[in-house]
Image (cartoon, rainbow, N blue to C red; front, top):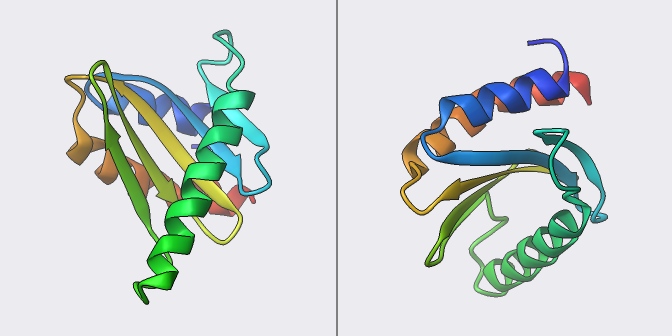
Length: 118
């Protein structure tokens, strides 16, 4: 895997029910999204940055250390965020029958490839 788009395509294609994936930074900036021809995910990135920051603050207040991942389910979707390092995270959005286990497995697999680029 050579570029971010290829990495995100691999992640999305490997996870059952995955609809999109992105790489964001903790300044709220969208680094890359897949599919690229879909809706602009910049606002989604900002919202997830806020979610991660609030949950990380709560975890630290409980002396739980820095968070590593977040999983959220709702009526019609599931989301899995994986913290890559102190400035980047990946996010996979799945339909309601998606596979969290695969999201976790493949998110960890792509981690080293993303960090080689950044």
